[in-house]
Length: 240
Image (cartoon, rainbow, N blue to C red):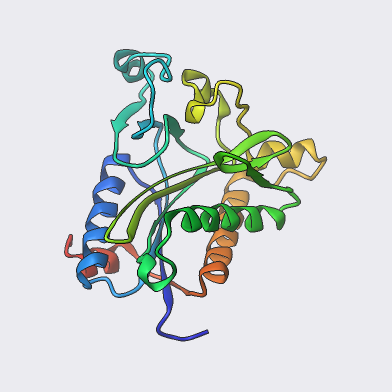
């Protein structure tokens, strides 16, 4: 694999949504203007937050902002594609800041690649996942395990995917997830238990899934993963 095609991986742990959103936007600006000269994957876990995208319809969020605030849940309306969704503890959220000019200038191709990243990663945990024709995301046994919503400017992407690992799925009852009325959400933890697999400790499972996603991202996009810390990233994109 060419050494000039690296995937910078910033695994930042628990990060508030507002902080992560500004970090994405700053990283995308740096990728566009060349200060960030390699593709970047930001991995985080958010405190409870609900986000709405460009396709969100009235009525898809079933409670108001005040009710969410009483439960300690933030609400953000953002520029990504897709409908309403939830992010929270136990969910692996990935924000790829990729320059598609180095890959393929096609957002539909990119979405399919992001889906394939998670399909491949989940296979390593005994979970047979696939696409659902006409619906973006990743599914298994008829249940949705991962959501995707992206945005791009000058072929540089931000926003990304949310993969339920040990997520408290009851939060999805506050909405029509992804605008699909009949959807049933699931997680890696739930599917493994349903398959009769021994339950791994939640932190270990989360770390293992994160590592698998990094590996499959590098493989599918022909990039060599290289870990960086937050200080390094802030320095490169000018937010230090």
